[in-house]
Length: 50
Image 1 (cartoon, rainbow, N blue to C red):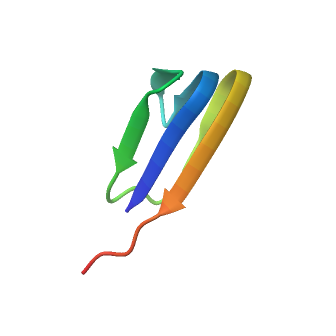
Image 2: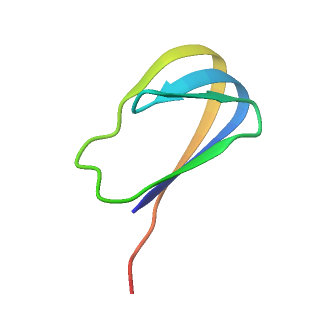
C-alpha cells in the first residue's frame, strides 16, 4: 500500500489529478506513475500491511 501526499503544486498520480494538499492512497497497484508535475513537492510513503 502506498500513500502519496502533494505538499504543493500539481501532479497526476496513476491518472488522478492532485492539487496542493491532496493525498492518494493506492492499494493493489503494481506501479506508481507520477506525471504532469508543475512546481510539485511530493511525499511518498510505502505503508506496511498488518
